[in-house]
Figure 1: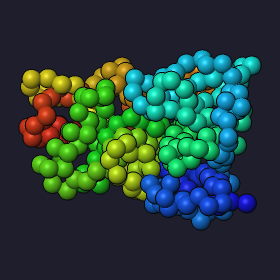
Figure 2 (figure 1 turned 135 degrees about the vertical axis):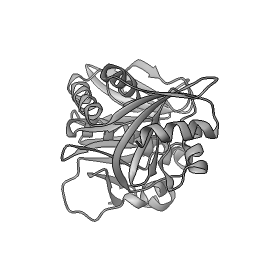
Figure 3 (figure 1 turned 90 degrees about the vertical axis):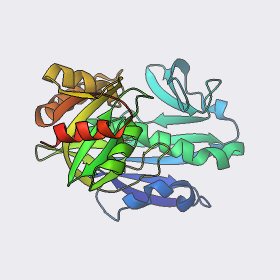
Length: 294
């Protein structure tokens, strides 16, 4: 029968079915703060199966292989139905995700000989993808960002890879009182009773920061490197252009993409957005803090 694990991330419930002998504490440790005993119906379920030959899953023809670095994300087209893969290299997928049409029932397949190495990799990547799709109609955004909690408010830092999102969060932690890290890679924004709330998630990149906590989102700050520190308030179009690319989405799916656009528009109408041109120094944190907390 296996073990059924139930989780709640940003108010969205989902279930993971693990085979007998697979320890959730070992492979899903990051999810332990999000365990729930709720009897409410889950938004989706995911189970993992180990197979002797991954090629036998026949996910379809390769449509795209995305990302500039690991993990790589594969999209397969099988007669108009999309399946997915994840891998450490661009040579071939290491695991295959076969979802139902609405992503409510999902199976991720892993090569049996690679079970020890790939179980947590397969589960985490599959859950992120499914979560993004299934929560999009519920005014929910998964954002590639670092977010800190300060004086009971959330401050989110966006930017291209290598821009210094995590570095800027650490500068706040070092130099701004009453500051703690909420999530360092994939926080979630959800509109709750018309208010933008930012949530910690089990997906925090290389930083072990898995907090089942939430705060009102007070500001979104896009970072760019510069030989000086300067911050300016975004007009709505600039705010949209900053937040939209940072949001995870299945952009080939019109329904979820339309929902994403609507949610982004609502968030930027409620939350002030900024552009910080900065150095990786303490003054950057002071400059940002002074502007966004006024």
